[in-house]
Image (cartoon, rainbow, N blue to C red; front, side, top):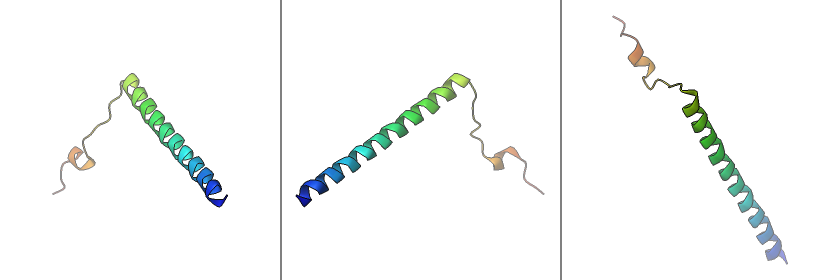
Length: 55
């Protein structure tokens, strides 16, 4: 009986992890879509490249 209960707990945990991973993927795709639709671009230039070096 203990093995069956342990199996049920592990099964529920695996389902929970799969749901979280699926949700994370949906969030990533939604953010990517919003970025593409907004037309805004993010500068990939680092802060050090924007300013001239001090003397």
